[in-house]
Length: 576
Image: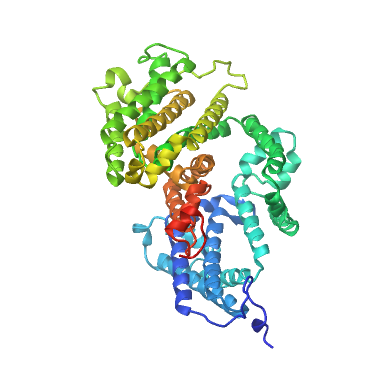
């Protein structure tokens, strides 16, 4: 008996059948090849080839090509739903097609001068794809595509309980390889040089570090699944579960407090910037996530808070009162809240896309005014407001000098605003915002005052953004009109959407992914918006509710197909 007749794919209960849609396989292969060619031509592969992921084994650029081809083979094998032979064949064919497209790129680069309109189609790219053999090595991507595609097809033969740990293991190698430089430095400073050199090279992981990381992640995940730790934890009463999680929460808090002292001022500055965006994200989370009011002019309130602190505290030309930072912060919050009322009153009757356009115009107006000659005597125009003192005046050798103090201040403010937002979400006002987001007409019919409730959303959201601007002014020590641009509003909106609208932990996670990681890897800055676009498309396709959505949003987007509108509300599961 043939082995492919008795070994089904993991998770299949029915007997396997040999049914391959070769048109789908070819389509997946062409798409994967197009992705590989795109990664080469936009510069991701050649630029990041200089960044080792595992020292002496694979670079970040090479890993991008390998991931593109392997994913192509895995998708083709998954769609096959057949036997062992069909999984291997479909994965290999899809990978082969992707490899052929890369080989055609090599041939075209050697025979035609593509650099006239594609700068990255360089001899260095050809050498990378052919291991330095040039046109004579055009066969290399074909063979690599065939092998990687078949290996990815075989991956779908692995039982599901092992498949997930393996993927997590490879992702952990990528993450630690990227953060190797940041992790190696504190280990060397703490006198653990031998351990640092064993795990991390000057850039990327060592071979031992990569194997150890993969083994720990995969082994730990399998042990968790084998003994059912997660299931046992979920089965515990809420009170007991909180008692068990309390030490973990305390440990995480201690790690967060010690991070800037262990990893240095650069890391503290990055986290302070993340906390700043968390503040603004929590504000927009009220306006957009709870009340459903899309505000693309959010940067205006940020600017009001920053300029208020700058003008009231600066010791330079445009300083007005030279107040302490802590005395200026309440004024920043109040003025931003008043600007929120000023914006909210004339546009409260606008809905949908028109509301987004109106708020976008307001944000642009504030930026133009900051750069204009009209406000030059007050705001300084292009020269901006400089010499903004730090919140805490300490010596240069004090451990709170530099961005470290802003790190702790931003964390305290973020925790305070998160608590306020959490209390508001469960309050009567929070439920009124949610009702307005779902249907304004119905909300008004049940007695909700639309004008008052919307206005409160704008004012509170603006106040949080103003507080973020105040922290930014203290962090940077200056404020210029160039800091007031549309991208600030887009970043905040992306944080709320990716994290999960209406979710406070989602805002924190979204800020870490979209602000913290790009700031840590400045070499990725040219591709930041490309990654943003990919992240947003992936979110809308695979997880439209966000990374950590609120319970309401999750229920709205995952109502079972056999549950009608009435049963979705009442909880009745009787088919209608």
